Image 1 (cartoon, rainbow, N blue to C red):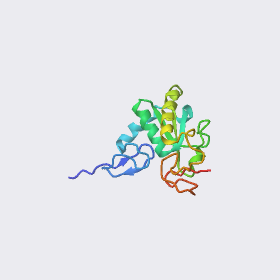
Image 2: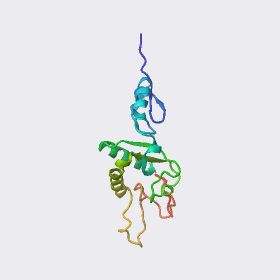
Image 3: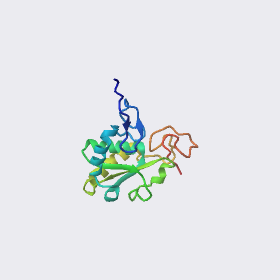
Image 4: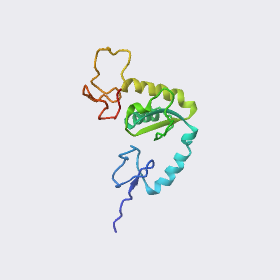
Length: 164
């Protein structure tokens, strides 16, 4: 009698994968078996819904994933969900990323100062320092992801950031 391995499921988006796959290709979350999914849902359900949290950043997946991984390594619980209108904190222009999928990263109010400090450090890595650029100098890389740009590009082909 042969035993078939149970398919793996992403607890975040519900995508189903072969038993040998360990992480969701879309969300990056660790996959669980169908039998583990109910227990995982209960554990996730203990963290407050987005409506009870504060948004730290709305950004493309690469930025959100880096912020999430950093918060996780620092032991700060958070929730990442597809961004909704009005999620972006004051001072953040989510439309500047262009036509790419955006995600909101949310934390409990008491963790907001630390999460914002971590996000500012990530922003320094992902965005150029506006005060150091020579006004006559043309940018040849995307300020969000560092991809090479042509002189007439109006949008980054890698991350979708729009210019202008």
